[in-house]
Length: 251
Image (tube, rainbow, N blue to C red):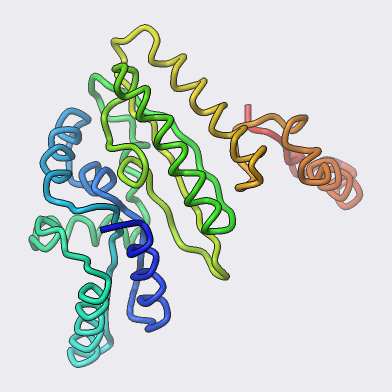
């Protein structure tokens, strides 16, 4: 029912060590993984969004024996009850569950990166940082995207915690990817996506939320002790012949 309850459930699942895999896959990512095209993706998303009560995640449980699996499932059901959560019914369907198991255990679930044919395009970026700050930052990013959605410059993915996904990292950190799904037939959509990404990255940097991807080293560098310069010096010292390409910003 809330971000706080979702966080509580994730912590309890981790503390009880019952998950084979836990990913902050919301309904946008679930619909993307079970749909054959961009158009079907958006239609599936519209259907699923009416079935959820708020933010969520996808969890896979397993066991070495039937008894262990039954125990893990019982613990999961108790955590769901304690945090006022509920299961998304279509995911319980064996056909859909099997599809998600196959793609997510094999870590091939980034279906939006396969550039499926359709009338919309996507873009986005990833960031990783201290969990509470990252969650605050992505909520702001979602609100900023919501304004563009209302103008028809972005596809309506529900904004924060619906159109993005995250993954837990040890010691209270959170990795998070934000997706911007835009219509290709709108002349201003590409520009809006670019400006949204830049503004969101700058906000992450200025608010000390996290170190963002997608900004040039001359902007990010001074905030992180010009780490890239040090890295290049170490690289040159150990590889004077340039056998391995120097690290640097992506083109």
